[in-house]
Image 1 (cartoon, one colour):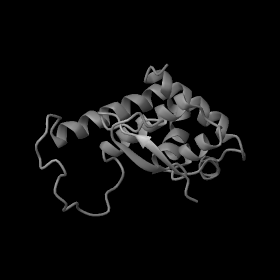
Image 2: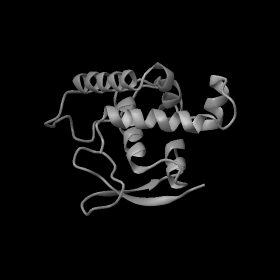
Image 3: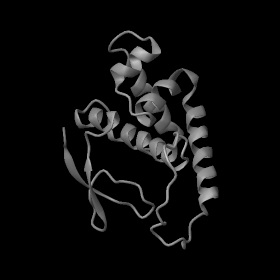
Length: 153
């Protein structure tokens, strides 16, 4: 199912909840379990922001296994004011590891499965050996702790 929404892009590259002028992108909000839960009002904006920050760091750190080598040229031509790719990778990995440690051992497993690996809650519950429909409560607690780690209002 496709649920398209126009989202703004912040100067640091984060997606904003609403378009506020400037650059924007069309996003399929049904593409991840976190956005699916958000579209149905099962998680609040603070929890979504925390989950998206974690997923961004996960993707920037390139922790997921790579299927093939990337042969494409960099979009910015290799010039920029940001960190070099190695430093950016290490910084994102450090932020990801700190966030997962901040969430704690009992909650980080469901958080990783749903936000980073893209598993639905029923699949994560089954993989973790939890009773059906128990994952949402634990997942929202994990998102709250993650939002506290990021000091989101």
